[in-house]
Length: 298
Ligand code: FPP
Ligand code: MG
Image (spheres, rainbow, N blue to C red):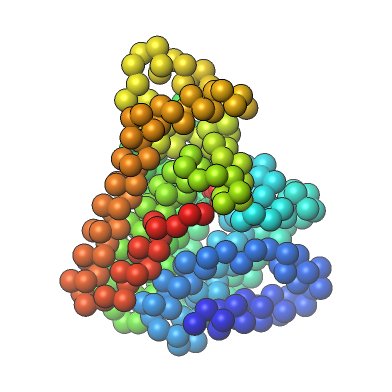
């Protein structure tokens, strides 16, 4: 099902007629292609859907190339990141090339689809900027976190579902709500896995987010659950490289206050809401992809 999308991305890249770009693209791990799967599940495998799925995956790949530069990440999906292999300049430019080619191709789909997708790209850029700004402080406000992950991650998944609905001649709104819930749950699980998964499974160091200054949902909930002196202790560990002992203290507190369970339950609730909405529309096939978003190990 996804091979048509892979072939379309390869075709778009071949059209650039640049061997270096082809070789660099080949170095990128493909990832789960969740956005593409979502589009094909909603709109079927007609050419406009395959093209839209390829465009969205190219934009997503571009955003991760830029994100790894911003996060100074050495790895992406267990492989060396492109910035680690070839430096920031190359990673940024490959991102710009994928992104601009994607936008060029978007002009050949309908104006409605182009509007939904391009608006989401502005949102994801605004969200990433918020993520960067929030990393400079210890944020304890859940709604600030939720707004940021909505923009950074859920907006493009929401737009993928909305665009696919437009292509299929289905009502856009319920699919966008479905996509939004999936996106929020996806990022919540991503942030939870930084605490619960071991670094080998994750393909990046565990507890990396907190060291980077990110107070993700588990840290906000933990802060809420702690007494005053432990709150201070946690705050003092923020945005630092932690010793083994400090890491173990955080993990023990997380377990003691059942934080992973609370975060998982919140993501699960969003998924259940999304699945119910789709079931009501008779779109039963969309439940599987929703569950896949949260029942994952990396
Ligand atoms: C991953 O977050 C990052 C995103 C989902 C979005 C990043 C968006 C940008 C850099 C804007 C790019 C804009 C254009 C136009 C291409 P994360 O760091 O929490 O997740 P990770 O664990 O996968 O790194
Ligand atoms: Mg990152």
